[in-house]
Length: 230
Image 1 (cartoon, rainbow, N blue to C red):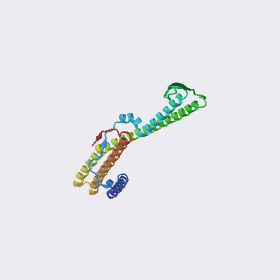
Image 2: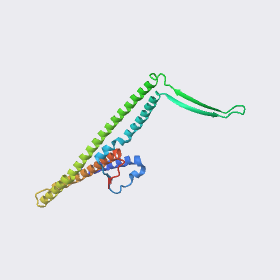
Image 3: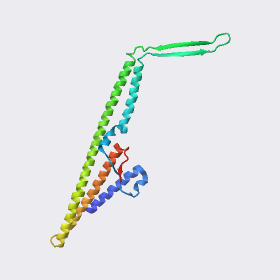
Image 4: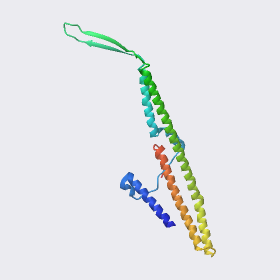
């Protein structure tokens, strides 16, 4: 049974290395050094920075452009005036000339031109803002779900380390003492040790899942953060 589990873990490792090589090339097959980096995460800080997520920030730029276009369209409804001053130096037989010209542009047919344009831009702006809010809520849901998963893994890992592993070791000690006293079979000792090995493997698996969940939260919502546990 343990041999099968070893084969399964080896296959998972090879698949993980192959996936890593897809992104970083041959370096993905090099031996790992040191401990995995564990990010120092703060839920309140992640929620506060949620609006700066690239997918959400893109809608801010779009909304800013549309808002500027709305203001421009509205300004076209107002009269525009200008002043032009010119000085002409002519031949000796003519005197020099200075001219002053005033001009005013009156918006004509605003209801048929500017008003429909303004209305269309406002509708487009409302659509962008609604889509932005939808994306924000989606990311807020993702953040809440990922954080809940992180909490679950923390609790599961604590139970294995603080309860399951000590109980497994205690069972080994009791079974071994009973075997030495001639009250238990060797198979019972082997079964107790196998159980502890299973608990150790479970702890490793949970720690890996916990590290992966922390990395997802960091890179999805907290790339500006600089805190990490070595």
